[in-house]
Image 1: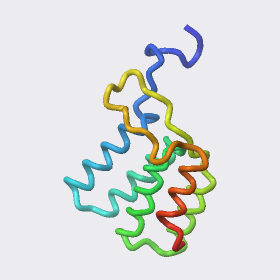
Image 2: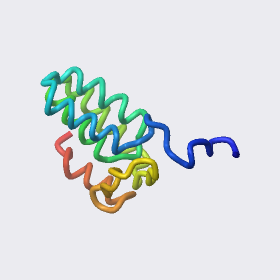
Image 3: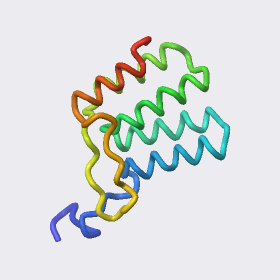
Length: 119
């Protein structure tokens, strides 16, 4: 197999945006710790920078943790500069069927702007 092809084309766990979204949902439902969500969303957007859902979760986590406005603004600007695109399909994860919020690419940037335009 060529480099990067191992595992039948499956994405590594850290690169699965759907897995990060499920993990964040678990944290919100089970562990009411805003600081933990801030840390988890930072890791999520670092691993899956193209997923608009994770960026919105990051911004919400920062707000819930009462992060300084400068930190929220920096995350918002990083999200707008991210290469938002539909996440790659993960054939190893049958639950990974969620579409991007509005079709990917520019539409995801518009969705992000609409969600957090007050920054």
